[in-house]
Length: 144
Image (cartoon, rainbow, N blue to C red; front, side, top):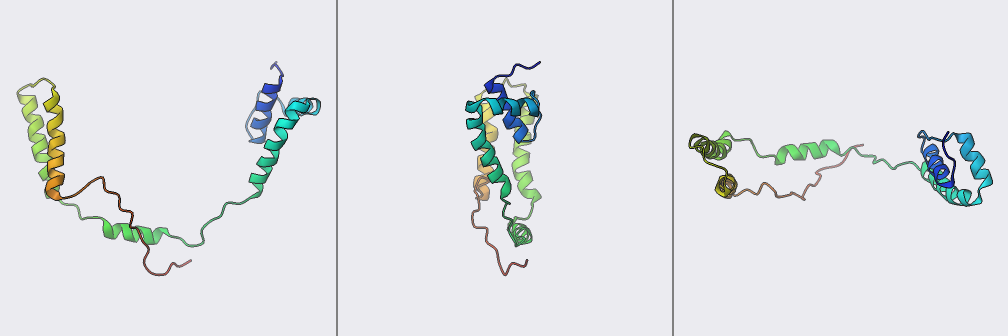
């Protein structure tokens, strides 16, 4: 049998209010709350707040924005180019093959060279892969 004390009753009452299982039965919790003024004073505001939250419905937008966003994302995506992949991949692959062929022990340079190659490629492309585009705007009228 579970030990019934104020703390266990409070935890069980909150679990029951949330629709979860509790080690104490609903009858045990209600009986304790009838007899214990301290627990009742703590549980009642939580019960009131729970009822208040449950009585409200979440607002839902009337317009479906996804088609406009999807269209805009498709327009802003740069075309994929195999040359860019080769420009970045070939030197990196060659460097890793050289490390394997010469069985070079791990060092600071073996970790820095790939990073330097990546920086060089992005610098050559004049592209910042970490840039965030905050200018997402909708065009035209939204239809419901």
